[in-house]
Length: 407
Ligand code: HGY
Ligand code: MN
Ligand code: MN
Ligand code: MN
Image 1 (cartoon, rainbow, N blue to C red):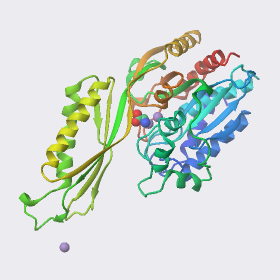
Image 2 (image 1 turned 60 degrees about the vertical axis):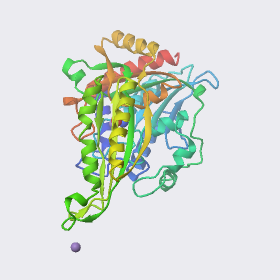
Image 3 (image 1 turned 180 degrees about the vertical axis):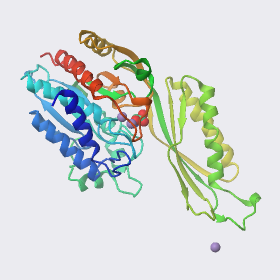
Image 4 (image 1 turned 90 degrees about the horizontal axis):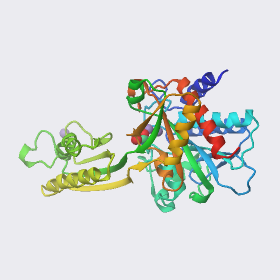
């Protein structure tokens, strides 16, 4: 099999580990599907002669030791969890490309000065425990051990219970000494339309948007749908709907590519003839600048206050806040140089999606490249990228990794 075929096979193999076969990839963290994907990834790491370990969060590492003792690693990887009914490429494309770089080191019997370490990260999407970027935030310490242990899924299962159910040791260290990381490289699908429209196979990421997630809970008064006059209702869903319907206007007001999304909404008690007494919904806010995000949060809190005055009880949690991040200039230059040397066309691009790379950029030099997404789509079963482009990403990262590990 050639590189393109190997990549295609691995993308397909990993996409089999889903709890919604035929309806996209649903691979929640610490689920059985996680365990199947985990074992698959560890098999590949073993095949390429890497030393395998898992940390106290369940992140998977495959290390090729360098000649320098106790030297920091060049880390390459991405996440392997998914959104509900997502695609096969978001996350796994970056893990597989990283594994193929390790395969090239093994094939060419390269011994680097600095260690090469492949990482498969958990819970980047936050689909099970909320927030997101959990594996990388736990590693760099921006998600504390206490906060990690407090997290529960929608059935009230804690992270620790879920980890131990699939045989992971939650007592292992979670935070990693940043001095053990020399740099971090991540390949990811663009998840937008730009590279495809420009017909360019590689995007070198210069910056990643700032993002925050809010969890809003509105409580009103349950009642009979038939006997409660309209002027005597405290209908939690009407309040939620009125607040959420303001979001597009708030985003447009802020410009800077500001976007606001409510992707998750629960109505309780969820009966057709019962006035909803409780609504929980998510708010995902992103912008290339920090100020629009704080403006939007302030305006949403103003809307909430006006409903609190009408007798609603409303609470807001903020499980995630990430500032906009620039990638490391030297890493950007290195990735552009390697693309040019390989004759691969590239352009600079900014990311509207959040990535583990933005977390690692707080502690080390980070470089990131994108490959085109068909029709610019992602977070859906239609998500697709050309393995030919992923193969180009392998070549670029292989050359960059040889420089960074000083082969
Ligand atoms: O939501 C994001 O930007 C990423 O896919 N977690
Ligand atoms: Mn995603
Ligand atoms: Mn992703
Ligand atoms: Mn009745």
